Length: 368
Image (tube, rainbow, N blue to C red; front, top):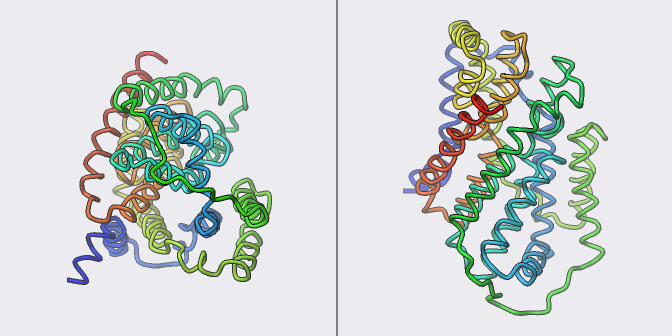
């Protein structure tokens, strides 16, 4: 019974570990394994998870969510504002950090207005917004940063290349929310006079800035990690204990899976052949199985024109749950609140994501 409950609650983790173990039969453990792991990303995610826990403990998200409810008044406008916020944030601090920061805000916004029935839809749209919002800038996501450096793409050329897909994404997200989210009035389920602790809020925000600086190489990841752990050890040890370590292990398992897949000659040759036939479509297909960052690393060795690959690894970030590892963050956050509705969430996630993917494929192929 205990094992069964664990499998249900941590299905994606179990699948990731199983997939990693299977590929290890084809690629035995060797010195190259250590290169699979993006320690900067892992450190950054750990730090943000810990800081977000600290913000939970001082009721930051709950208080801010109540301010949003008072400001926007209807479910439609509040959800749309939240999704736009996630969209814009992903352009600045990357998709995974945008989700780690704003998913909790979305939960409290819906909880404090008795609208949790919209949580699955809101989380899914936040994920799509985060995965698509980062496409416009070189630093919006890891695959952009890699291709930007590998192909030495000029800044303005990069932005102009991605502008139309970016614009299509904004329009699609807006239309979807306007159609499917009702204009139900929002009211606070509980009215109280909680106030933010100014000193603790400033401290947590400082730690959040340090965490984000890791992404931009503002500080070495190990220094940022030590600072965040050191400070929280003194002010909020519980924030460290409550970090979702299984999420971090899930990322590690997918790093092993993707790294091994790229080293299996038959797999590498197969994807290399496909991408030469149609870089855009087969690039998107590759993302659905090994996620967008490994796809960018693998397929960039077989193309000379970066544009179709850039489109593919950005648009291909929507679709399956593993097409972008940022989507795993949302899934873990959702099942934390609704542990019995994981499969239902996956079904809705898949339908909405592939609808977006299909429309964007058509728009990019025929209107870009």
